[in-house]
Structures are given as C-alpha cells and as structure tokens.
Length: 130
Image (cartoon, rainbow, N blue to C red; front, side, top):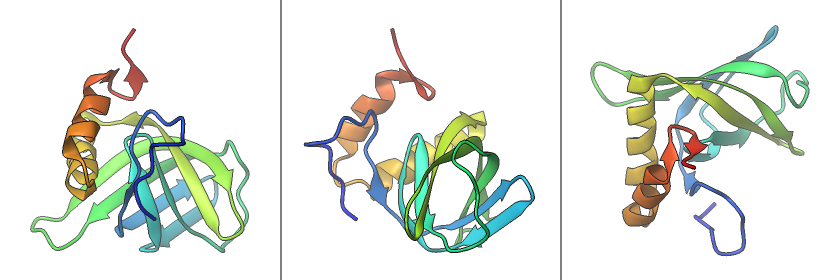
C-alpha cells in the first residue's frame, strides 16, 4: 500500500510498514508480522483468526525488531473495521514514550516527512488542536 492523501479525508498519513504486532482484545490474542500500514491513529494488518467485533477495546503493542534493546510501542484502542482478511485498529491512547516512537515510525517510513510533521503539529497527541 502506498501513501494516499489526495482523495481521502484523513487527518494523518498512512505509511506502508511491516512490523510485529500483538493485540489483546477481550479473550483474543493476535500476533502477526503481516501489517499493511500504520498512521498516528491506527494500524491495519492481515487477520484470519477468531472473530472480533467492531468497537472491541484492545491493548496494542508494535514491536521494532533489529534494535537492542528491542523497542515496543504500546497503545490502547479499539477495532475500527474488519475487512475480508484485514483488521483495522484505531488508537485512543498512546503512552508518551511510545508516542515519540510512533511519530518516528511514521516519519521515517513516509515519502514526505514534511507532511507528516505538519499533521503532527496540527494535533495535540491524537486530537486536533482547536
């Protein structure tokens, strides 16, 4: 998947990325490396496991491998959309240290860091500045 903001009404750029993800949603635990894309407010990945409902609250960890010590980005969120073989999660809370890692993940995987920086500066955390 490529970045595409021209015809979408998204507040944050989505970037294609392959990372490890662990999701705890009720009694369901999902572990995958088959991610599609990531933004400052969500992640999508290939999923064919036990069914989960839209709106289910979850704990989400994204793992950055190949660094020592390993880095994990921890968030709280909910299931936003379920596709044929895809699960999309929306972030609602991100710890401060994790937020900085999330920003860097999106920035450095983007084709246009300036656009990502502008989006981040227009928000306070995950919420738009008023």
